[in-house]
Image (cartoon, rainbow, N blue to C red; front, side, top):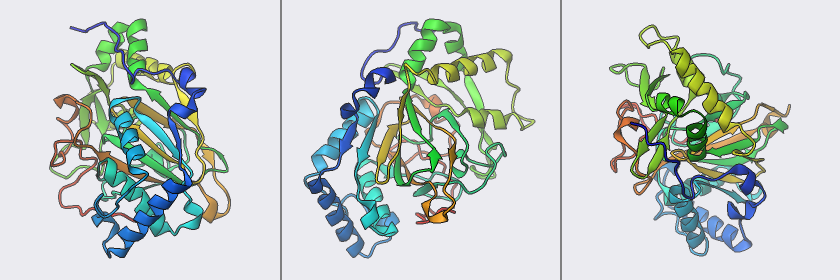
Length: 350
């Protein structure tokens, strides 16, 4: 039976209120912060280890460490997102930037695979793919990405180059989406608590179905955890073995999407070179506007990406992992993991 009580707490924020209070969710790196990170990069790179082998121990932080741990607490148990500004990427090599991003990520959680190729360092860049193609992923295109979640506790982005036009990032509290949907249509909240089928073409081993099924809203003792990718739901409808969506399921997703885009709920931000954004996938939905790239290939929009599993991350119910392939050793979401596929951290998009 549906509990019709709205969920309160720091995760149930409203974008219209936070938009004018950016100091609450933005940290501008000081000169001392930047020096601390650069020193850690040099030490990590001097170890001779491959990027994927570098641990938090190999990337020691001093003055920036308390700030980063405070941000981590906010990510996992507070508002669920933050923006770090001012990493001097223009003075760093690609390897140095990747090491810095990886090292920060290592203090936040464990990097997990983001695709069927085993990429633990991802690249959000337009590779000229068709967003509507069954096996395409949105991050490989310049299309608008509707509000969605990823398959990890945290997702991190580092801006190497912004777009010529567009490409704005937007986040919304999925807890607030739940509360608003509960206020308007509690009957449709109940529909979103039932499993939806999603495609996983090319992202599961051959002994498993090419789809997963998971509820959007997972209500539990500590609140609600949300997992949602409508494009993957739509593409799953191309599979004969997947049940057809009902009219009421379509209606529920339409309302969900409408609420997520509400200007009073969502929060918009534009990435600049050297910006890092981290988002909690269980309490935040994220989106991106369509964008136009520069003609110069070296100036085209390019973000590095991490998916992180956090041992002390938010509680989530078994329904969220029943259809997923594998968990990390500490029982967290293991990203897109195919047994036997080696994990790699490419420095270029591929």
